[in-house]
Length: 390
Image (cartoon, rainbow, N blue to C red):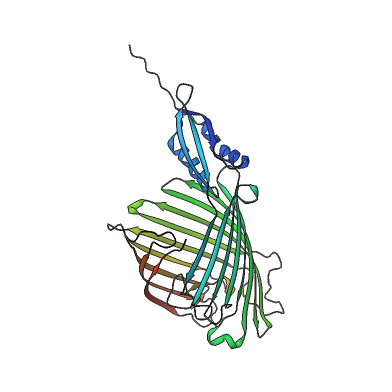
């Protein structure tokens, strides 16, 4: 006679070690708490909980399973380490002739500020040439905090910029000033190591002014709601894939600019919407140092958009051989192919490693205004090198 005893494995306890504050420890315990009610416990549930813990701003968590006191029981110990504050300075010479070509950026991220879980990001960008360093000044700030125990992240950010184009139009004394604030909420719909799907919800309140010779030329105020679904895949065919689809829609709130306003405005259709899309693939090759980046992005609408909502090609993204906004319109599509080679030189204390690259890109945009001038189709190719300072 054989007796078969089936033992279902389960977690009898979750312990958090190393949390910098009690609030973070309690949040991690809440994220892991559903594991205590699963019988039998499965690795997929444990993996998801650990990924959500590591998604918390400024947190790195590792886990250890150990035998529990009861038959079939295990205990999980989550060891938490906080990330150090990070600071980054960037410099490039790929800016446009009107607000460049030199661009310097300073970015700092502070983790767990104000004594609670979260992150605070501050950024400053300055652009111009060797004689005029004030052609572009932009400042951005974003504060992110976890919400609930299901991996949601709420953030609140702002952007302010001032552009005084140089080059051949410097004498016209044109100035563009803009501000934007944008609360956002990110929800993880699927979270595994190979696949992650997120839902992002947000609202942007935008204000922009254009001045000519010190006098007001245009003044726009728009409020735009956003819904984005994004997918990240890692590992299939030895590469990574990122894709997203976004829906933007204007809202008639917060004193949005009216077409009948006495002030000249870029708003043509007050009730507008647009659909944006992006697909990026980084493919590793049989040579470990060689990889290929492929990217397609664009947007579609049948409305006449304010210029601030245009799809734009040219500059550091797609259309690198042209000034920013060289091809801009209500709708359009662009693509990029880039071959990358990671040099064998080891990283030095303040420099490296170096990556060499060559690219070919192009984009085309269209206007829904039949009286407008058709934007050009642009293509460019080039090569260069990247290296970080740290």
